[in-house]
Image (cartoon, rainbow, N blue to C red; front, side, top):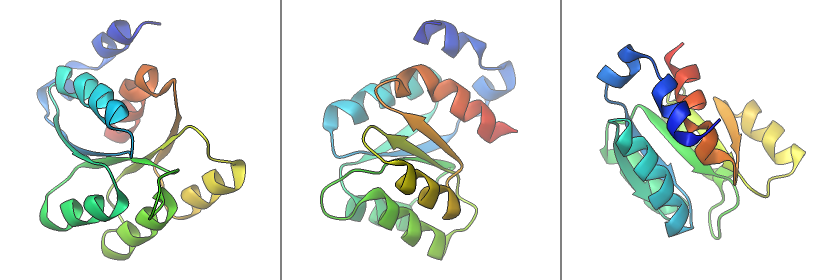
Length: 135
């Protein structure tokens, strides 16, 4: 199914509700691509290129969800998720994974990750992940 078809599958209710989403990925092109898809769906998007930047944004912003890469230089996604959970146990965090091994994915789930979306297919599955958040 194409990205456009997936976007059209989002229910009318989801399209009417703007979700404020933080995308955390050390690759600017990935952040831009995901932001374009989410903006096209009517969502408000913030981006962070590091774990430290993400935590600062989370501290000063009201967010509805976070898309978080695991493999980042410096503070990796697992540590970012751990720190998010220390301050907010209910914020939905969807893991974006291109290189994570099964152990990292299991640890992310134990730390309360809401979902895991695998790159490079992430763009095709964003709508599905957001729909699962709405349930």
